[in-house]
Image 1 (cartoon, rainbow, N blue to C red):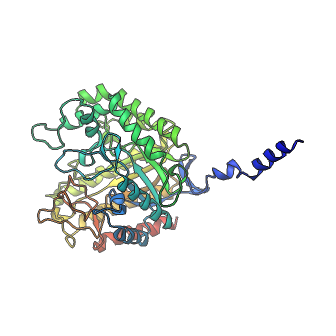
Image 2: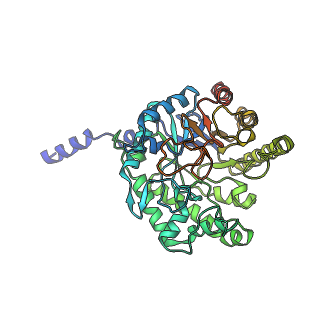
Image 3: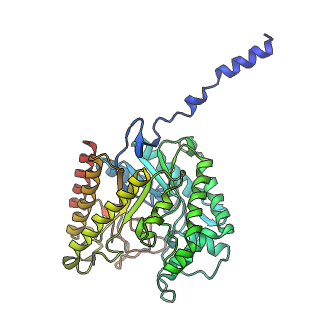
Length: 438
């Protein structure tokens, strides 16, 4: 053997083994139609914390000390999974987040990206998992309408514009799926983020087990009207399949999910939900439950509407469990929420109906978990923590930094859970203990 060959073999032997470098330890996976972590079922109690990266940013709007306090509070509740916003586009919408990740096409905010790095590092220190959504059907973070505006696809207008009554907004936003130019800009951002290396830990996102899943978007819908939605359905389904496959090509180790609400975001069609979650590049089924927004429970008259609305929620969960079983994929109820009593916003206001609703969702989840079903976890919407509305009318205003779980398109405190909501916190705490005991 020549000296040069010996030197080459010695150098190769000194390199870490590929299998060791690409260990699956700590990564959430799918096994036999259920979520799995290191060979055991992965079950969780989670929350939505869309603003986590904003708190983590080293900027005037950031507050890293608050971020650590909020994560400590959630950890004390045994919340182990957070769904967070990892994208956003500058939008002229009246109620939109600012600043955001992408101020102009291809111009990324380094402070916010580093804020996301900090969030993931702090979550890792607490053994939490993250689901990062990469787009938004709603314009409070820019989202799909912002991309359409950038490529001049139609006349932009904001959600809730009286001159464009429902369902004009969802029909407009859903044009995004078929716009090649808009998707080229979107994919450029996705490629940049998925390929990012965390500036705090030095770990590439692709190799970080703190991340449970990449998510295509928050609540993507094929449209709002039956006429447009049916016309756009094949384009919508193709976008889900192609985009999820694109993300898998960049990062095959992490799960990918749709962010879909389920039937209510799919023209009330079971087939739409099944087809959206059928691709092999989609790892689990998602569902959201919003009985106030869907007019199942009237926040102004809960006494007359709560019981019937709760029955519809129970049926909704049961139908999505059945669809997950049919697909042999896990299910996550990644958003659920109800307004505070009398549609109040302030900390200290009553939460009896909200607590009852949380308990209902948790009871259904726990029963399916105990039966070995596909339901793996829940993420309540959303964590307000110590955040408080900054104005008497409870609406968000540019420059506010006391972020809460309710995004700028809603009154601050409408659905979120404050750190002082003792009864709601106790419902969450009890459920987390019950999940751990399975």
